[in-house]
Length: 165
Ligand code: HEC
Image (cartoon, rainbow, N blue to C red; front, side, top):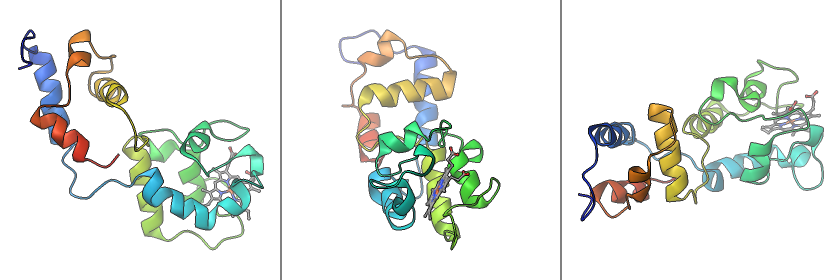
């Protein structure tokens, strides 16, 4: 494997191996379209939705959420600790959100953090994006041509597609 192509190099195999190890979550990761948007809809749209966008921040689509506010990004994919959105929910930056309270329950904050820490990807992230992320995450470099040619028809691909991004 890959059929008809040159065999994968040691580094690439190692990369894929590491990925599988990392990518065996015990619980499904929250997705924007699934859990996250419904939390935002219930608790944030009132001030960060279609009608009102406090400080220019909209949280009613993935693209808008990733784009951030008038002051810049509020979500740093892969780093919930540094994400202003989380810092506001935890009260590490003021005013705490949701503005005027009540605070989000701990499990909802945990879901939002999980979602960000897992890279805040779109549920429809395509193979290119996934491979780019994988490559950047693990070796800090964009993927090589060989890795880009790899198609999701191997058992690894099956696993990738069963994971809910
Ligand atoms: C009742 C209105 C209201 C609600 C509800 C609300 N916000 Fe806000 N939000 C504001 C206001 C007003 C600001 C700007 C205040 C400031 O930062 O000085 C703000 C600012 C923010 C900022 C900082 C933007 C920036 O770049 O400075 C973030 C992040 C944020 N809100 C996230 C949320 C999240 C997530 C929710 C839902 C859990 C939420 N907000 C619910 C009113 C609200």
